Image (cartoon, rainbow, N blue to C red; front, side):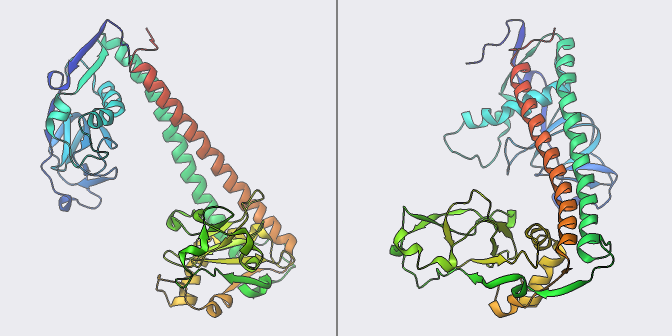
Length: 388
């Protein structure tokens, strides 16, 4: 139970702001319009005309309820299922934004027994109780503190995007051979099967003919494709009997093997790490065991994640249709163009890996500041920590 300061106001939103909805439909949007047009998503569209010219806080009336908020001060329009909260009294707009965006989701959840809410009714907003400093000066100080987090997070986001653009440009130059690390060494086209060890390319064995009783809930994991579109191939829910592990050794994974999705969104790749869990692949995956005398593991990882190469896989195996990877024979003969000198391969891989690491560190820093901001909001918006 939160104990708010006794000198803070305790009021419902209906007494401190006006709550209305927009009048527009999504189809009203205009590409490259002059004014912001807030719809039922975090993405902001554009219009060439505006319906409001004020300071306001907006939230969606359905969809991602309690998770999408906007602060605006100026000319804008809003969808008819977007709530527009404006004309603030006794509370400054930006403070309301931080307070409302932090606590509204909890308010909605408290009003329903359902795990999800289909839509927001106006009373859910107007009857919501807000606790806030009576002194506007204290509100401004809190806003300034939280704004500093937002500014840093926004700057990090811009820097991350800039670094990604630089990295993407380097990928194109280095993996295409346009920019060379060793000009006196030739490049060569290899078929995928040529950069694998003998019998180093195999598709998982568990098709529809394998009965479920072949799986157990102990023993060795079965790797299966999950959320491939988000580039994560995770351990599945099934295990294979330890007694069958040896006979399925051809399909088992080891460090630096690559498993590739060949169903649904094809071409997503996962590199088996040093601390891997023993297991075998299922029918939705291919396993590639690379010969590092021909192709450096790190270079292969970058090459396979190169968008240009992913499109080539689809073109080579399916003629452009993104369905299921058909025919291992076609996949085996998909070509990659790489330096014959593994030292040049390593140099290229190190450059790209260092760029990826820099981006990863920036994303970790951004996540850290987002967590710090969340903690600061809990402390400052409840009066646990006072700045005056």
